[in-house]
Amino acid sequence: MMENLNCDVLIKNIGQLLTVPSKNGPISNPNRESLGIIENAYISIKNGEIKDIGEGESNIQAKNIIDAEGCIALPGFIDSHTHLIFAGKREKEFSMRVNGKDYMEIMKEGGGIRSTVNSTRLASEDELFNESLKRLNIALSWGTTTCEVKSGYGLSTKDEIKMLEVANMLQKNHEIDVIATFLGAHDIPEEYNGNRKSYIDLVINEMIPEVSERKSARFCDVFCEEGVFNKEESEKVLKEGLKYGLKAKIHVDEFVNIGGCELAESVHAISCDHLLFTKEEGLISMKKAGSIAVLLPGTSLYLMNKKIPPVDKIREQNVPIAIASDFNPGSSPIIAMSVIMSLSCLLYRLTPEEALIGATINAAWALKEERSRGSLESGKLADIVIMDLRNYEEIPYWFAQNRINYVIKRGKIVAGKKGGRLS
Image (tube, rainbow, N blue to C red; front, side):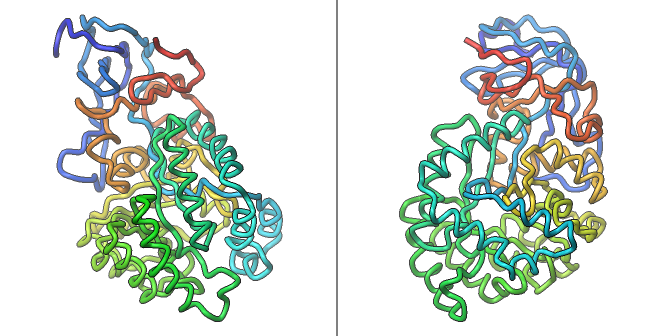
């Protein structure tokens, strides 16, 4: 413990501090010890980074003091899979679904991704930015401090670039750190019906080079699914992305298994997401690639899908699990990560420890941000959530209750019911 350290902020009287340390990589099969719990703790912050963490009272001198009043503190939530930028709404699909129609039937009747594509193409950058800003404000109020955001509702070079430009505008104008992913291979647009090869050529020969030249995205994603992009097409897109410096992510095994997860090793996939129908061969490929399994229980809830990912097999293969909201207008209009934690436990039978690590340090690994965030350690960003709870098991227990007192981003209070910005 370092005494008499001049710092910007001291958070004292933390009842239970969850440091969630990650020393040798992402965490698989976590238990209580994996959370790095310190009882009766404090954190000191300087220049937006954590300087010191300790137990008991502190004599550290600070410009500002936050009294946690015996509550829990943990890393800010990281939402590693969202479709935050879009125009239009799809509430009619909700009614269709509760009346018995499935996702593919809704798509055939003009709903689904293509419905949002039509609306997003018509929207201006300013319109998309303003609506997305409101959504980020809600996410922030629930403790999200870093958020991945995909394109994929443009499906033309102009409109995909428009979405990524909006993502980068959000990064510059919002407290949440926004990390952009190119998802031009989200669907085949209507104007390319019957000519899918030409669209894939467009993605490979025009979109990816343009995205790379503009440095608009960090990742390249593809919807590897029956009726969308097959295994060979997905591999072609992802490998082209790699040539241009875009790391690979895969939407895979959401509705059926077409072997997409088996691409993980060959494309060095950072994450494979959804995984409802993933088989052992795919998990072995993910393990060899060092991929994170990003599970999306909000989508299972909204699609009323009783199928769950092979969680036991994922554990057996020691593949680390992250969880994310998959926030989107059609199949998961949920943007609160504590709600996603609850759903991951209730629907997928994750343990509270798996859910918490999945929303913090493993999510950081899924975005290649593990060195800067996802855990509370000296030198990392002071992205911290203080919740009006006494132990971490209460987070998924209090379903859909926002118990956040403070959201601290880079050492500054930016949200929370206790409010108040630091000087």
